[in-house]
Amino acid sequence: MKAVIALGSNLENRKLNLDIAITHLDELLQDLKSSPYFETKPVGGPPQNDFINAVVIGDCNLAPEELLSELLKIEDQLGRVRESKWGPRIIDLDLIVYGEQVIETKFLKLPHPLAHSREFVLKPWLAIDPEGEIPGVGTVKSLLASIQATS
Image (cartoon, rainbow, N blue to C red; front, side):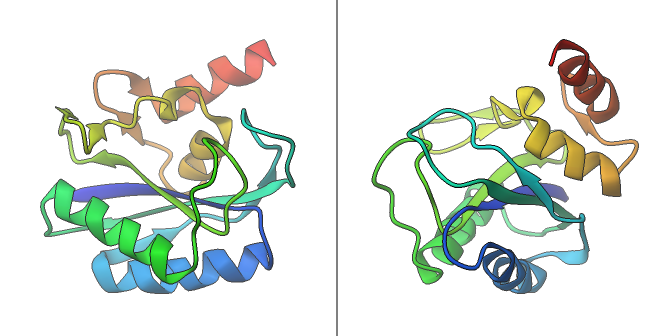
């Protein structure tokens, strides 16, 4: 099933953090495609450094909950510490879309509930998947255009 994962880092060597995370993701996903890296301003949370963001897309045979567990393991391996909501982080991996699945549990919400409003997700996603779509929400292209028109 097609998985879309957003990555971000704003601590230490941000590019290296993404490079390492993508190496781990390449072990979980087949036919992995990675977007260019984009430098972005933080959204919400305390004052903090700018992020580098990217999106990867690949095919996955795991159940969505298993994939999310693997993403959390990668974050732990890279030293992620959760001190404050939307605070600085060495790595952030978010499962954005998993096929056409719509899931809402305590552990997992798909599609990701904020992805449609996050330029730092949509812009890198569009760079590698011009036909990308958030199920039940809209195309990545139209969602990004809408955000950019209001900013």
